[in-house]
Length: 368
Ligand SMILES: Nc1ncnc2c1ncn2[C@@H]1O[C@H](COP(=O)(O)OP(=O)(O)OP(=O)(O)O)[C@@H](O)[C@H]1O
Image (tube, rainbow, N blue to C red; front, side, top):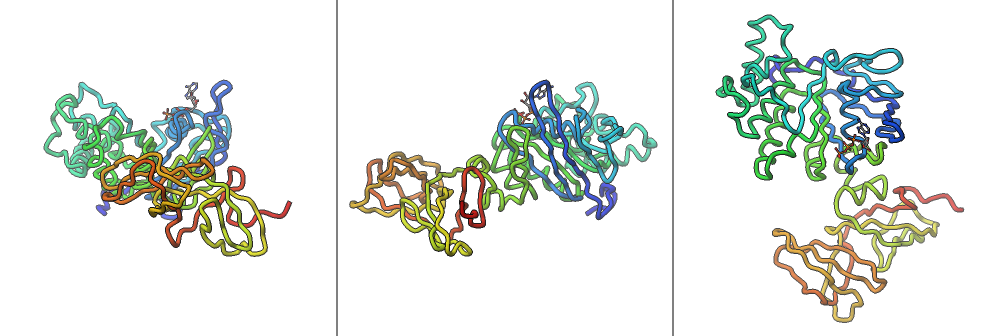
């Protein structure tokens, strides 16, 4: 990493802490008792349905909204909480928005220099050159925003956010105005720059794959509440709630039973459940399409009811004898026509998530 580009944060001090932060608008609780910590250099992705409070969370950190309660710390300093209130310009945060929000009458270099007005002129010019090189736009320094592509504008917005060496960069759906092909490239470039500079970032997205693929940690929100904040693997493979299981990827739920450490449901034995010996409990099992196997079986009461071609994989929906449906990813070359009778099982070695009510359980619930 280039030391000149390193954001100034203490190695052990979290870059960002939200402690019991709440924000309401009239009767709407947009953020409810949020607890969240980002370590220096961490990239946190925030995801959830429309209106769940993602942008509010970002705006609270940026200082564009005041919390009703709770404390926000940036690089160890309280910026909101109790009697303390730091305005946005004193918070050491960089902002990148979906629409880039560049000043149309300023050149690329002037846009990037905008937040550096307190810096001596020579230092400022050097810094602008440095961050423009970082985003590979040094050659376009004297262009105006309307003379740039969408992807280039987004890189200018990132350069402008990084120029003052913020403790945290906040990105609100930064790629959603870009078309599909460009988005993947700009996303990869942006993440590379954040990594190279060791920048702590919080990024709001609507895109599950994006949240999982770029986040060190994924924060799933619903109705102003954090449902789960975990590594991408945990969020996908061990969702904490029914909502997280279904929101972060395709998931089907079947009533199931654990007796003496054996998990069974309508399709038969699913797996063993170590540590669940001597119990006899009803649960729901979460099954993802890549965990469901199909074999041709004319005797089976299950049959294919829908087939969707997705290119590399073909999604089969199967109706079981009970009327419930399960989905199964089949490889590119496999296509069982609608009506085909199939035996359904799970692929070997899976550790499925079990739910009691809407909560995932890893221990047998206490006897009632
Ligand atoms: N300024 C405001 N005044 C009143 N209500 C607001 C205001 N800003 C947000 N809200 C409400 O707070 C809730 C959370 O909004 P927020 O914009 O944070 O959600 P979001 O998850 O970012 O949604 P989206 O994905 O649609 O952008 C919503 O119910 C919204 O209507």
